[in-house]
Length: 114
Image (cartoon, rainbow, N blue to C red; front, side, top):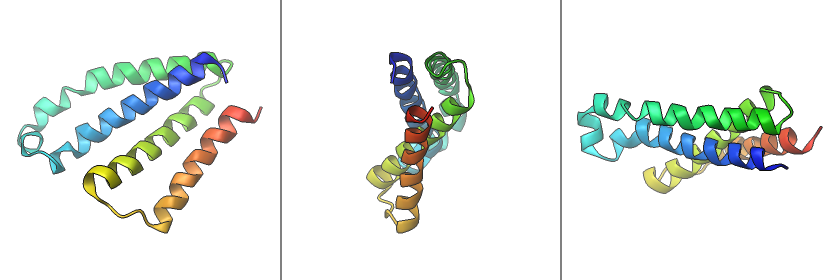
């Protein structure tokens, strides 16, 4: 695994966490629920992070876009599952565990199988 894939994973994880807070913060903080237009302004820095994550995946994966998209999706699944459980106290069901396991499997397949 090269440095660009690692940079891509870091950027996608940060971006997906920011998206989680942007869309679900309304359930945690009344201010975010009251001012959705202000919260939506978080969109441009999030997009910037995700654009760079995509760029780094492209460079690290030999000019392919599908593997980076799938790894980014898996990062989102893992971040969402963790934050939903940790901050929203949602139970981790068998269905959720299987989905998270499949997300991890997607990352492994895309990075390690040529």
